[in-house]
Image (tube, rainbow, N blue to C red; front, side, top):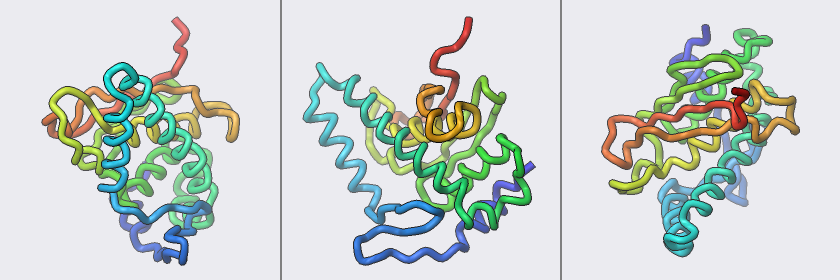
Length: 197
């Protein structure tokens, strides 16, 4: 089994440089270098502008944007030289190891302190997040972790759906707990989008 703590530590040691456009070319992808508060304000402004009538549809669009990003960025990460150098020998043809490795990068980059706590290949994944930037959005009524929801289902697609680039949309994610609602951690349950009864 992949040593999560060591993987996060190893990924954290990889030096990345921000270019003149504010982008970080690393892990086979281009990552932006904006503060998390920017994205929280961005989400909040979009939701406020949508109003109550369009709130649910707007939430779905924010989650889908995260899923698109997670799917394409996740693929770039898992096929990068950096990912291969740190985890390649440990996860050859191991889809569970691949998922744990993707979350190690997720943590190393500071997006969230999240880990897989349950995984049934092809059927279900439960992720707990003990810190994530969207938890700074105060709410007593709604969950706001669109990024983790979208990325979690995208990572599951990369592991268990059709091969890239045709696998996006095979899984859905439900957030059942959230720090932004006063829980001790966020909980995210990923299952097939169209389960067979």
